[in-house]
Image 1 (spheres, one colour):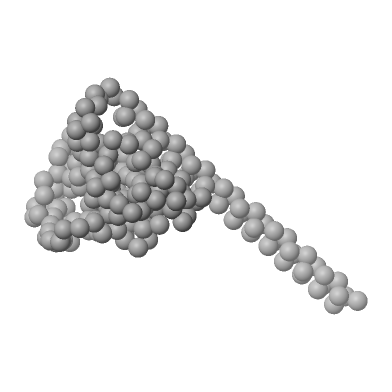
Image 2 (cartoon, rainbow, N blue to C red; image 1 turned 90 degrees about the horizontal axis):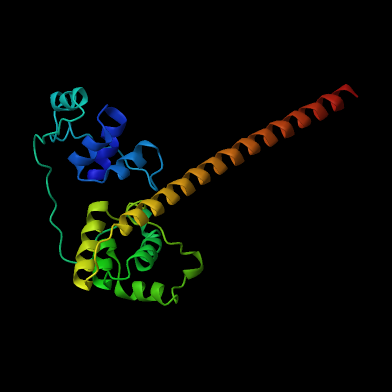
Length: 225
């Protein structure tokens, strides 16, 4: 559970994003999104000290030296799984079509089998999104599956590199730029949505306060009569 562990380290330690990302096997931008509270879904923190994977002494070493790489005290217990699509929590399953659409748009060289394994979906769903026959196509918006929490940046990069090699595509560095642009755009979109929700809540509170004041005034006037 790298995301849950990273979330706990962000909230409870002074470790750098790089240190946390390196220890949890995540991309630094994923950790930064957690720290900025911009992650598409919230993770319940998992204490690596309690599970025995880290010691407080090891964390203190890392906090004292930003260049120090944390050493795992005990490897986490691995859970074996049968072959098949990746399991995705129910709360994130509605995001799958957005992630699939993003991959189809930005990396058409990736095969349906690779997409299915990366995100945990079926060829039928991928085909429906590709030919726009999906039942919810009007509401599907391409979004980076990493930002959505459907996969890690390392997993996506590995599949992109493998697909590009098989397709004979030269790496000109443009994909990295495009990935960065899309991620920044999504982060800005999430920030704007959060600010809009905050403004709406504030306006609603003000309207409720005014309505309560008017009601109290009318009641006082009625009592005075």
